[in-house]
Image (cartoon, rainbow over all chains, first blue to last red; front, top):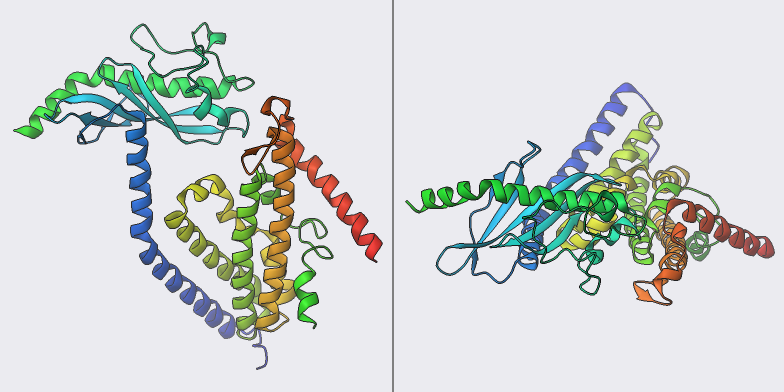
Length: 206
Length: 196
């Protein structure tokens, strides 16, 4: 078959045909993978929630809450015990001040407001430096960098360089600051909104 | 053309990264660890094979003046398919490669093979060319990723070889990528010169 010449009609028709076939194929694949993608995302989220919280019976209704400083809302996932009381909260929080910009952290707080666990969900920090957030702050043998079990009642968590009590990741102070910022943000939401939570739950029960 | 030669030319003689120096952006960006390099290479191989086949089979119905946009649409379609499939079935890997998957669309290797090979050869040779070039690309990425991971963190495929604190962090970062790539290119040049 000879090659089509570059007449206006041929160009329009061939491009139209190719884009039509391509979009049809994409539509089909999208339909086929959509349920699986959603399932994967939900599983990732619920895995993260159970990883950061103490043992609980079921999850309450998630809601959004605005941090004290008026920044963007964070997602709160209350965890309930068998009789429906809130025993802990997981918060999907964030910071825009990482070395690579946006980081997203799932952090859990128990009833007393102590950090019960965390998991870094998204980040673009430098591999080998800031990317160590996941292990660094959960290393139980290094008490000065271990954040789990800490209470934020006496004020925000800060890195040692800023006069705080937590050792920053070596050579990644900016990432460490952003990480602590995200945890502080999560805590400020719970602290502020605690009355809101209970009334909302009551309202639902009516 | 001898299909075996066609297949193996991507490994050393015309290796897309080490000899043709195409697609350096994803090369330097994704090779912070061996596993990332390898998966990026395999993802690109997949796109290369299918886009080469598709382009070679439509080469006669695409007028010359609009061939580039037509090829880009074909390549972008395959990349999007790959992206959705990865997101659905290997979300972990999808997360770690992140931005670089959609960037396969503008990877010079894919468009370069479409223009230089698939648009002039039959479907079968084009598939072989895509496979060979893709594997050559994946191999180069694997080598570069392993070297950087080993020198930077003391691990290969996350298995510790020596304690991490002796690693040279620079190799995980961008400057180390350039240095490591430079040395690997020098070695491959030496091998290719000997053969010729």
